[in-house]
Amino acid sequence: MGYIAGVDIGNSSTEVALSRRSGDGGNEFVSNALHRTTGLKGTRKNVPGVLNALGQAAEKGGIDVSQIDRVLLNEAAPVIGDVAMETITETVITESTMIGHDPSTPGGVGLGVGEGVEITTEMGERSPDDPMVFLVPETMDFAAAAETIEKWSAAGYEVAGAVVQRDDAVLIHNRIEAEIPIVDEVSQIEKIPRGQPTAVEVAPQATGRTINDLSNPYGIATVFDLSADETQKIIPVARALVGNKSAVVIETPEGDVEERTIPAGNLEIIDDRGNATEVPVDEGAEVVMDAVMESWPVADVRSESGSNIGGMLSRACDSMAEVTDQPVDSIEIRDIMAVDTLVPQRIEGGVADEHRMESAVALAAMVKTQQLPMQQIADGIEAELDTEVVIQGIEANMAVLGSLTTPGTDYPLAILDMGGGSTDAAYMHADRTVDSIHLAGAGDLVTMLIDSELGLDDRDLAEAVKKYPAARVRDLFTIQQEDGTVDFLDSPVEPELFGRTVLLDGDGMQVVPADESAEEIRRVRRRAKRNVFVANAERALDLITPTDSIRQLPFVVMVGRSALDFEIPELISDALAEYGIVCGRANVRGEMGPRNAVATGLVLSGGGGSSVDFEIPESFAASLDRSTTD
Image (cartoon, rainbow, N blue to C red):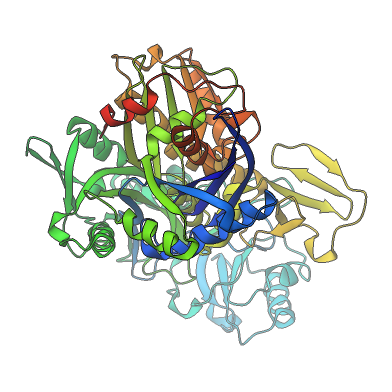
């Protein structure tokens, strides 16, 4: 009686399925294991991770690792994925015009319009008939500022609003009689031009409303008495202020606000016939993806040096060349995926560290070479364990075979293997031949989109946002879920979590330092997953289907790390439901869920039958030699 282990080396994790050969020639699965992949997939550095995973599986199976008679490795798909972001718009302010400042705690309410005046100005220098907006520097404390505003108001002067350098808006508002809008935290108040028409607006704080007048181009035109031509020029100002709870706009003699398009470089997409299509990245993701699909199958993608995209493509090719010990010019980029997104960027020329959401394009690339040095890994494992190690089969074929152990499936069958760096798809035909394809874009791209759109600047936190639902801690005993439902807790939360947005990671609550609500986090997260996973699932199935329509696919099974996500399978199933396709998460061997498909397939292909309720398709092993890949 011998033991066989199937080992699936992935980009982020290494999985093992351990089986025992029974007396009738079949296999009985006795354990499985999961361990983080050590080193870059397909290199000799994978050996320690494989040995750890094998040790875990052996321990669970009640044997010593030396009792494993044969180790079967997947012939890993020779691909490396990478991601990059290219910002394609910027808002630029000239002549100290200030827009879009939205502090967390403005004071007062309403719209105030007047001439910007230093609060230390002598009363005799002003006419009581001219409204004023006081500019309060950090050298004056809130009590003195409030006293000054009260003194001017009592003397008959109209103080229409205030712009404050320190975080004192609420403190000042609480000490004055007049209800005026006050915006604070203007760090570079010295750059604001004095003596110019200034408008300050603060929305009612308790209602959840946003500003009305300064986010409307016609509202700004009314405030500053602009002509039709001038109104057209301030459209970027109004658009930048949409959704703000407070804002300041200053009219300067030569000032201007403009939205520029930043040259993001061009991509040159080359098809398998050698025809090249050039597409500017700054035209957006839809144009890029149309060019990719029109050039399919893609033979290579090139980009201009000096851009973020060019650097990413060069980095991916260099990594693959190092792994395979091949010249860089022999490495080919076989697919790219582009997604339109928004990223918070500091406004050039602002005076209060203003930010606005700028347009950007995120790209993922799939780099391919002829062969990964899998034999080096096999030799390293064999040397450590003194057992036979065999490179058993193509990864996609093994995934199909493992997926067929899911109850209720049959072939013809398509699988979606959704990992961190790539989305892979395979299709087993009625004659048991298998086609497979590898597409750029998966979990890592989703993480980058979440990180950029929420402005987290923390990849680990963005990964957590991707994996767990968000909630708002309402008080010590209740939380409001991202879908609006309220849960009552048996024990109080920690005081520091009160009023915070948190992630429910199963073991507790993780604080999200961003200002966004749980509902906004959910919207960003689901949109990123939909734009990557749903789009790639439809693209992959469309490319591997043997007919003109994916409606002809009877079964689609999702496997891989991302198939464990709490909402990705649901999003894909909903999208494919309109095609009448039976689509769902795999349950490998009826017990493993979407995990372990490749490792299970390796055991089945290399060890005969199985004790699970599954019959290996006749002549499947022979079909492995005839199968085709992209």
